[in-house]
Length: 277
Image 1 (cartoon, rainbow, N blue to C red):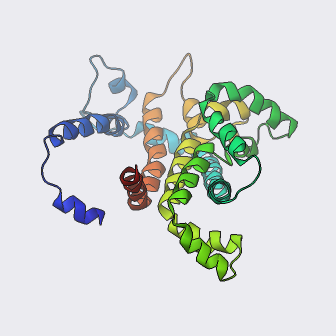
Image 2: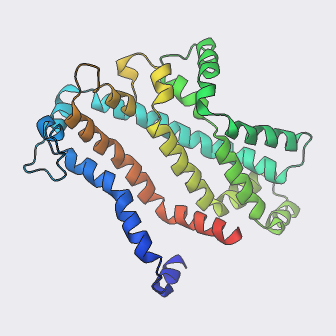
Image 3: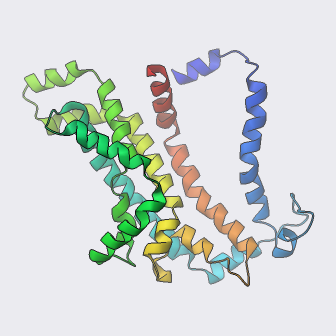
């Protein structure tokens, strides 16, 4: 349906504004890719060079020869995939409970959960560190995973999507003898695939790119995540710019692949929300 709408959309003057804006937004990514094939002398040249005169692979050679790149990739993958799976499970159950189940204090709990979205992320770092320390999880991947097991935004997004689903389908299944778990698993979740893919993409982006909390929770180099490992290339006395650019290119690839894999359902979810809004 979206493809059919795209074919029917006529030219709009806004395209003259959106096309340059798209090029402007893509420019940093293109420059990062080009800069990854420059050496440190080219990157430190003034005025800056946009297009490399000659291609160098110093940054990539340094990464694969000296850095703990596979370990950082593996740690980031473990953290991100566990958090995505946990959010899909827990946010689905919590969102369905807030949307369909009537229980005492549900509105108060929902208000408290939404209120946590207003708290700046930096204010939660110290309390989170104290909790993780008492759980003896500091300097383990568990300290990075546990605080991101349930994101309030995911619960709210799925709750709003579940509210938009017709109750008649669930009531018919209830009359036929289905339990709440079976209704959720066999009827509601298949209909909510666009919203679930949106939650998965957002959770992956948040956990894959996070550097603040892993920098506080982890102290061993072998447990560093990828953004934390990339940050170690920069120090007060020496910075390996070509390695940083090459590592950023490699770190961006999984994010692009995750978005491309869920692009159709992600765009469908946003389009559906826009139509309903």
